[in-house]
Image (cartoon, rainbow, N blue to C red; front, side, top):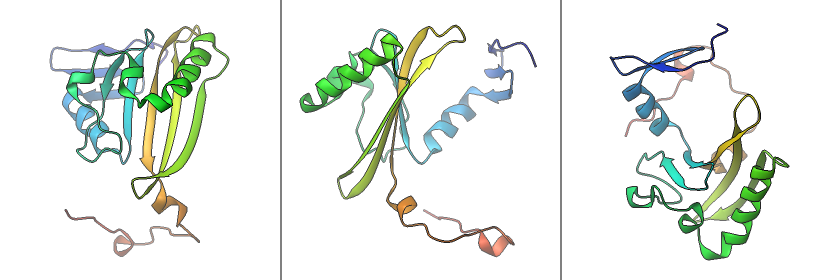
Length: 153
């Protein structure tokens, strides 16, 4: 697959070079991820977020379109501005940090999004509770179906 163009057909199916996925399936997939994702465009406006109903940092539809600094606490403004400045300048493509917050161990990572020519298209914030990952020890492999646990809500 050399064609890197993404298309949307009349049945609301996105066609990527790596495969096809219906838009609704993609929406559900993104909201099923065990972390939250926020997208900020190249003009530093908050444009999109995942919402599984259990976010660490709450987001609302009303915030969509706002400058990203409006979505963060005032005490974080300097840090967010520095991240965006370095992303725009092309001097960094990722920032990551973690801290205890709201009874969780929260991992936050910002990633610059660039096209194939290096043009800055925006960034996304990836946030999740990593406490359960920090407690993993040893090895667990799937030997049979009894090794698979299902979380029933």
